[in-house]
Every structure is written in C-alpha cells, then in structure tokens.
Image (cartoon, rainbow, N blue to C red; front, top):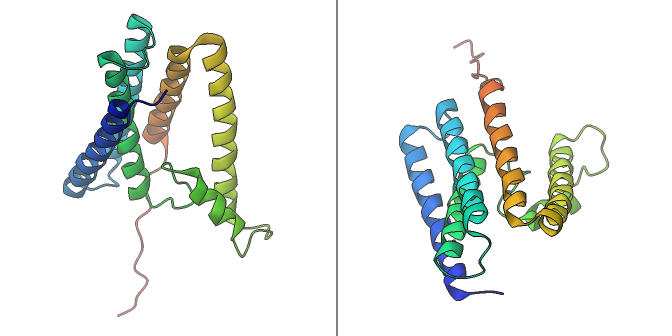
Length: 177
C-alpha cells in the first residue's frame, strides 16, 4: 500500500540528505577520498539501522516504525545519489535506471567493441536487474529485514572498495610554456 506520510517523508528526507551531503561536499571537496569513505560508511550504517528496526519490531507498512525505516533508507539513498553525481559517473545513474537504458539505446557507438561508457551502463543495468531479482527472492523467502541486511552488506563492500581502490590520478601539465 502507498501511504502519503511515507511518500512525503521519504521524498523530504531524500532531498534533505541530498542537500546536506551536497553542501558539505562543496565545503570539504566532493571527491576527497576520506569524504567518499565517510559518506559510504554513514550510508551503510543507515541501511543496517533500518535492518535492525525491522528485525527488532517487525515489518510495518505505516506508522512511526515504518517512517523510521523509510527515513533511514531515504537518507542513505539521497546521499548516495549526490555521491555518484560528484564522481561524474554519468553512465551509472543511481537515481533512476531509465536514464541508463535510454543512454544505452541511443549510444552511437553501441556496437563498437571498445566502448567504456556502454560497457559501464550494461554492467550497471545487469547488476540492477540481477540485484532486484535476488532482492525479491530474499524478500519472498526470508523477509524484508534479510533483504535489507544483504543490501547493507553490499554497501559495506562498496565502502571497503573505496578504502582499497586507487586514488584519482593528478593531471600532468604537458605545456611547454
């Protein structure tokens, strides 16, 4: 069921998280490694907090506990979208898959072998579809809290990858002037 309070809360918290993460990112530098790691760790904690609420109190479709879960997940999602935008990974839209599908379909170089943007879009969309199917299976067999726990584990893995991935390469000025 759709509840106006859940929709309003989710959208408001999502936008608030986007604003807060974006504005703080402008201050500290949106692509600084420590900022990316911190944002990801906070997002991971929020997903696990939502998981804990559902494990502790069960799944509710409306009411304060439901709004708490919606708020935690909306904040994590809003922050994630801002973070992905700051990384300028335009092939991977964490906000909506339709943009990636359309960009894939209109790619002039769709059938060219060496096409990194196309390959990233395809990988993103495959991961999204497979993840959605696995999440649906988990939800159906083990419940919402278990699906959220797996999602939190995925976010934790992403945080670890930020820690161990190479930093951004500095551009070398080759000008002779």
